[in-house]
Image 1 (spheres, one colour):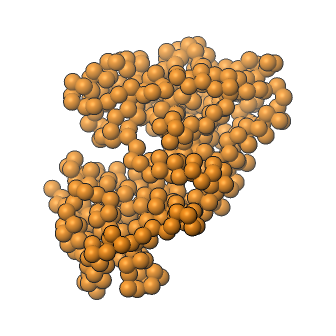
Image 2 (image 1 turned 180 degrees about the horizontal axis):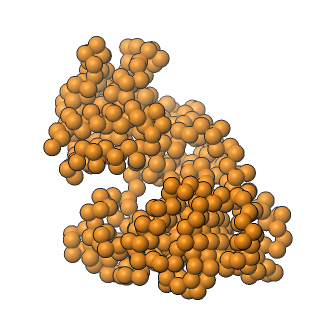
Image 3 (image 1 turned 90 degrees about the horizontal axis):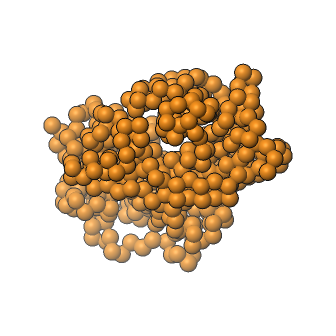
Length: 438
């Protein structure tokens, strides 16, 4: 059984791997399985790894303020160790200060242990005197340090949303998200699943907007009652609403153009009461087994998976579908609470996404029958990936128009952005378009 010291060592190894480009959620899952961690240690490991990634900019601000060495002289491994220690001192109340310091110092190589010890103890002495950048000075810098988002991204958001709304959004992205499930209505009801959770002492509640969702504090998924029976699957409330916007009915043919890992295809099949056809495509053939195995577990029989590039035409699909969902690759700036690495993306890496998104929308529109509905969705809040892509598409296709929709408790004139600070969901965009005359 790992001791707390072992958990911190595992956290250090994972953070070093994430700095080299590995996704934290995948690394965490692998480490938990490899080390057979008990629930308490699993929780501590997740807290430390995700917390340090989320708060990296804030932690580095404190390190650079406290260090006797210039920032560039601190080795990457030592900086990561310091981040781990400071995170425990600043952002957790479950770990005593003396334990956080001693366990962090034990992670450092002998040549650096004195430096690590001195910096952490200096923080404990001076913590009340270390000020953040002034709010009324360089506002993006203030936001960057307080909420741990790159200053360039903060400046970009201020330009789009204004100062006050940007701070509200960053504060929402800074909160630890809970877990949202979609009920498998082939096997139970939302009320039935909530009752099953209550019997096991698990506090859960119905989602506010989606009639099919259940929300609860983060918990090990496989330990939830009903998991093995396939009574639910993980899907954010906003994503559930994008499926609702499709208005899929039993007997229809529906295309899910960018389907993996499958939650939207599952939701479509449930809306169709497992009757009809759901054609689920994904560029990466290696991800299709995720959809197949998930469908099997849920008892869904109408999903057909095929590898395919959604931006390239397949003439066999032309004018074949009653509904088409294009949940396109995007920057992910709506899910930064769940995937903290996204905030550190190089803007140049996502600059070309609107062209990819438009190409997918342009191509997949050809698969729709007259009178059918085309839903375009992203998990970002940037207008250039959302309204601007849809506007460009509608300008080039006069036979398509925005179609008002109601999805659960959400109503729209055809296009809406959901925000974590107002809707309490992922940041998410949904546009519903109808093919044919108004």
